[in-house]
Length: 403
Image (cartoon, rainbow, N blue to C red; front, side, top):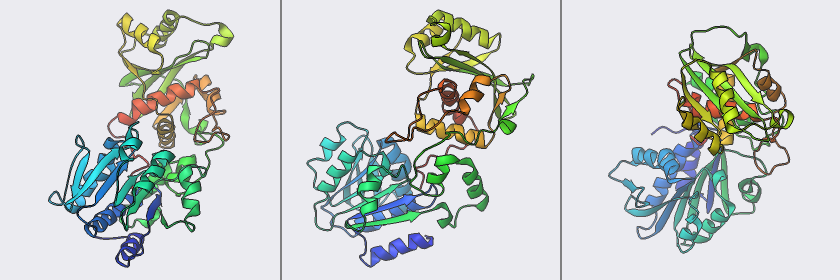
């Protein structure tokens, strides 16, 4: 195996017995922190008693498999590591390792009675503080240790304030990894990645900074790059995205793909507070007018708009799909597509342009959260990008938790 300087330093600390009770690696994507943390976890478990109990945990079992279990299997081989998600259990060098996801509402109660010799935690900022506190109390065997990785979040996150910032007061090792610490990545790939992450996501996932999300959410939106003249292009496929409102505005966008770029061809925007509320049937007529005679593949709709989704289905013309409404991942994807110029806007989409100029982070919120005002076109754009564009062939989807 080849190691970066920081990875080699961690292994040296392990060999010299310098690891601590809590060991956290944080920093940018693709910096090698997840890879070395799993190598360290495997070496450390091999040095521990066979009759001890160990735990590996992530936000979900699916993310644990994707980020850690499959990689660990590659690192040590199937003869040394096997696992079953259905049984929520694994065997690593003959030691029993329990598997858990913190999204499970019963997760905290399940570990409450455990006595653990070690725990591995993937993406700590996604854990609840209660679960983490309970987990530390379970690490009661002699020499028990916790290994954790995470990308940065807000500087007010509990893992930052109560643990990382207090590392000198605790039995704790904290090491930051940056993308430039990984010498085995292709330099061109690194440069492209630095361009793809913008704003607060660049600060956190490239620079490894714990910073507040503030100011414009899409500062990379540039009318000179992203706004084009409305003209006939030979689009290959069409979608419509919709953020539905009754008293609040309803925003719809017609999208067409041409030469690998998605264009917002035209849009419809209706403010029920200014023009009067509409029924589902009236909104459906607006949808028909926006679509015209075009072959719309699917209409992507706000998943909470159950009555409007049913209305569209009842008419039978359009296939309708509830949008993926993960707000922060969706905002990051829109920022990436703007940075790569994968989405553009015909100059008639004036409601979108108005919202781009005022769509800001809520700097009073305890977590990353947009101000919920003048955001309806922003929401329908996010639904489309996160649900459709980022699932298309040729689009690389890199999640922050990739180590």
